[in-house]
Amino acid sequence: MTERVATTPGVYPLPDWAKDDLADLKGHQKHDLIDGDEGEDVVAVYERAREEVIERQQSAGLDRAVEGQLRWDDMLAHPLAVHDSVETRGIVRYYDNNNFYRDPVVTGDLTFDGDIAAELEAAAALTDSDSLQAVVPGPYSLADLATDEHYGDDADFLAAVADFLAGEVEAFPEVETLFVLEPSLVENPPGDGEDERASQAIDTVAGAAPEGADVVVHTYWGALDEKVHAHLLDADFDAVGYDFVSNPEDNLYNINEYGTKDSIAAGVVDGQNTLVEDAEQIAERADWLADNTPATDFETVYLTPNTELFYLPYSTFEEKLAALGEATDIAEVKA
Image (cartoon, rainbow, N blue to C red; front, side):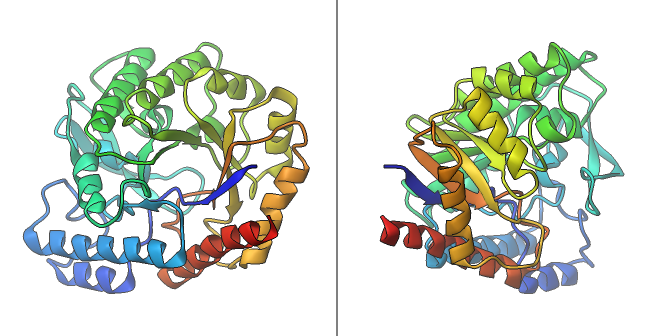
């Protein structure tokens, strides 16, 4: 019997009170203080906000809790934006939407940093290891979002980013699940040769996960090209994430035509739209997926929003968490 697990890709919106508090600290605006060495007052705001979003996930009944990535003003580019060998320069559009991030320009070796591990250690103190989920950008997406002025070769740069992320992941505490977010595989798909290197880079990061952790490579904003999908499956991880909000038919085609991993993550909640799906709708989408993949008996289906959630107003974010947690309860009742 397939297990349904309620979770999210993380990268949450800040609680409204936290936005206000940060605005009062030195006139804080987006990016002003996020450089890896924030002052004590700023750190205290983020600590309190972290506690709140973890409690929200727990009270919503989610099966996995993430740290929230509330400091990630630069979204998936954050791990580079706070690195000592990276200069943050001009503002760049974040994929094809109205969000922006600072261009992380790599000017030196990408050595170990520990920023994500420190956040995760703080989250680990607030929840159990068997429900804790780590979140990292995928190596292909992180390299795609960055500018290289050090390595000088696209293949070398991707490999360096993968090694950097693997080093960060190796420092993680015990977790149940690791979500590796790879929207660039859809938004800016790798070409011939590069698709194989992207798969190898993901394999490098997945191989660094804490022992026993399930690794989910989550793609979104559409569907993977067939060849990219095939190369992705060559990497050694546990589940591919598919966006069944933006492009359900093509993602379904990839699964039924080419197969997938033994488990999948199903993006069945819209991470960008303020319309809140109720629990019954979410459960019905999961049922639709099961009905339309008759040849595949998944071990686990991670029910998740299709994208990061920072796009949403905080109150809407809370409502979507509650509906998502309730959806797996409905599935258990039906079973």
